[in-house]
Amino acid sequence: MKKTLVFLIFFIFLLGFLNLIFAQQSNSSDSNIFPSSPDAWRYFYDLLRPSADVKCLSGDTPLEKITNCIKTVTRALRYLGVILFIIGLTYVAGLLVISPFKQDLIQQGKTILLWIIIGFIILFIIEKIMELIQWLARG
Image (cartoon, rainbow, N blue to C red; front, side, top):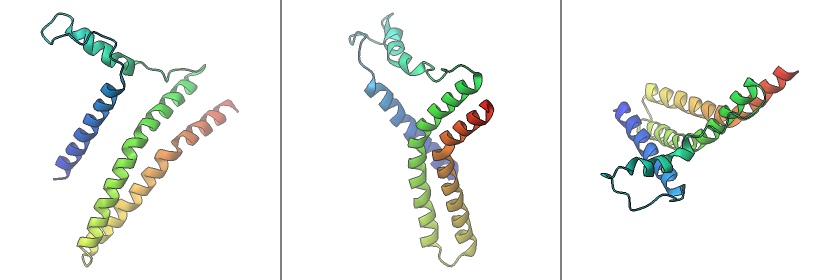
């Protein structure tokens, strides 16, 4: 059941992410390309190519390049993190409301809530942690 739920959430996120990519791209290529034409690959290549560029590898040292990439990834993960935070809080609330007298489920809900909050905090302070690591490496 949990694997199915995780897969469903991942699939919905993937569809939303692909929709975001396709919705933001300008349609610079020919819109009359059919899937059976020899130039069909070009349409999808032009559509997906801007999102494949690695723009985070800027900086003078390898540490700066890694830090920039981590910052870019964490900014993207924040959107997913907020959605998973809300889903996790809903699940914990369901555990605590539906099973008020089962101590094992209440303890499981408290543990899940603790790790949800810790993960959410880490996700939002990771940029500052990376800046601290850069500052310590320079000094």
